[in-house]
Figure 1 (spheres, rainbow, N blue to C red):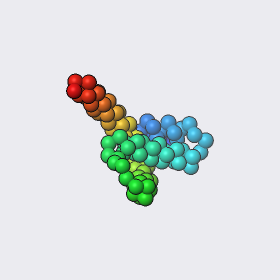
Figure 2 (figure 1 turned 90 degrees about the vertical axis):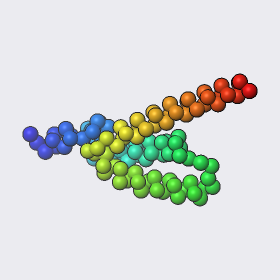
Figure 3 (figure 1 turned 120 degrees about the horizontal axis):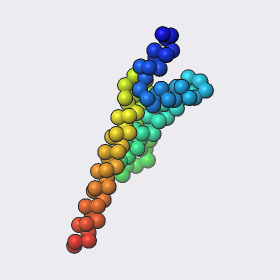
Figure 4 (figure 1 turned 45 degrees about the horizontal axis):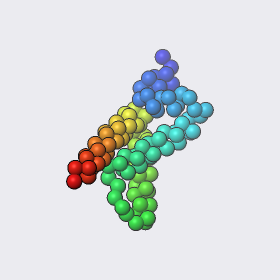
Length: 109
């Protein structure tokens, strides 16, 4: 068994798909980082974001970038992207339920 096949077999699905299908490893690494950053920003927006001034939003984006870099290294062999997708789905369901409850309360009053 060659070393490359062993590494691909150890990767989680999203990382493996990116590394097998993109033209080179550098582009695959940047794509994985972009996916993690975008999912992290989406999860932050759904679950934790408040109305903040632009400067504070820039600081938060900077921390998301730095955290995304660390998560990218972990995403090769841990289900980071998959976990972010599940977190986003749970928060989407929560927001839908919250929206429905607000609509029902407004209709009953």
